[in-house]
Image (cartoon, rainbow over all chains, first blue to last red; front, side, top):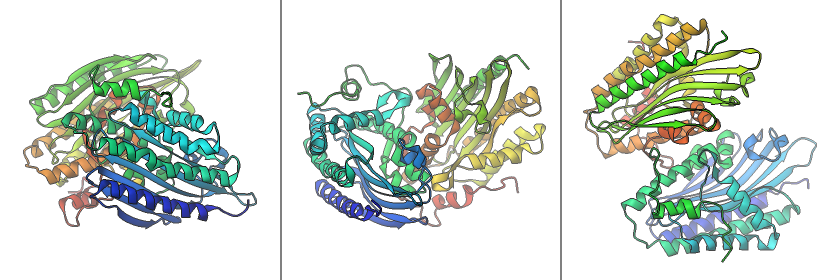
Length: 304
Length: 304
């Protein structure tokens, strides 16, 4: 392969962003996405869409970007550090939804494609992405549906895909300093270039295309649940973990900040309102304690 | 020097923590510090004190710690990477005050001492620390007082100390991804072991001892100013920058998290309530714009 596949990937990603925004807007029923198109002085640009203060979604961001750079940052490829420093281009869609109702989980989805080049060598390409769920209050039925849909997204591509990328997701979305998973996982893959471009591209599309099928039924089931100050307080406290993860560990965030990305588009993943409280612990036996005990520890969610 | 000076430093630090807490409590007038003593499985421990929901201070944390470790993390000494991996001990006091009133600035102070050892070599020691101010609304008179006091803390120790450590502070508390200083600076020093232990220790004490003289008069001048939703909103938004800096760049935070420190003691620096808002900018000519234009860009605050 000597020519770039970036254009075909870009076409898919722009369409994915469009579909995600349309369906989230429809679900929210009140707020609309605001769009910003931007360019980077170093090359490339993006289309950032943010919905704020919706009826359902306190904030939802869906970002498309396609950036070129003179030197691949080390955060871009943990598995092949020898590629750091190469000329690269990266295209991706990232979505983060922070619902207002604490019974509706926060969700994240990402599909990305990278090419790294050096003179007189064929370009190296790979896909990455996945989706993961961060509930504040756990519902077995929701998490099972989420993981079943994740498995469906994988099934046509390899028997090992769901277990492999489910485990990678558990390992990746982990706050080392708290020895605590960020949420209940889903799928995470990176550096994927096995079985040819077509295979990897179709798999990445399958992941992007299954996200709303995984998320919207959960939103619909929980959005009418009545919440009060206690639930809101716990949600804001738990959102602190989201911030800690994204700023301390997340590869996409660090890649964006290190490669001179557009800060506002990268940090639209951060929740609109967040609390930290020194040494807080949930009351034993409470619904909040149940999240830590029964939902956050990695589990096989496909067991019936 | 073959014996450790850790005990004499520790005695000073514990006393400093005690004095800081007493005077902050007195100033607040309502809330008291809650104390947690803790031990680390790897060696050492600390005494964390947090005051929450005060009349004046929404949260104030003053942390003492003395930890030992088998391998110095790279974040501990940027200037001498050859020391990474050595057996070490570190003792320090860190203070972060988040006032409720948006007209009262957030303040940070730190004094730390490190010793790194390796078999058959004399221990290497150094001091670090400083104090810096993060206003939400700028008052020239406050920032001048802050910097004058910082200069007073330095004067007996070297003519170059104030300008050198003032500049270091401006360079250090800088959010690269936003090309934006965190606040109006103050003092920052690290890897200090020039002119002997006594000199460095006395200078570090002078920094610790001048902090309240720099901060309390500002608190007293601003605490009765009436604020509303607008000022509170801007404060919560600007607190986001504090979180971004501490989690992405701060050497002390990263050192703590990397060296297996006590997470709750390290992250007590994070504000109790924070907002992020996509691509927000202050209205031109507003008091909020004035912060960005007149206070955040590094200035010589000693010019009258």
